[in-house]
Length: 70
Image (cartoon, rainbow, N blue to C red; front, side):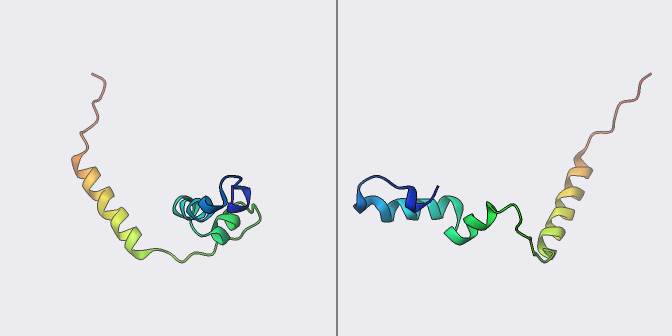
């Protein structure tokens, strides 16, 4: 769905576009996500990896030991 699909009051078109951008991000990025042949080029997120490791450590320290069958 894009601003071109809007069929309501022309005065509301700008608001509609703003809401779409809030929901989906910029139109050019939203269109890229719909392209199945798109190549994703991302760099590793070091902060995200560190945060994930910290969360995993916090979760594992709170896990209950598994019960074994007696």
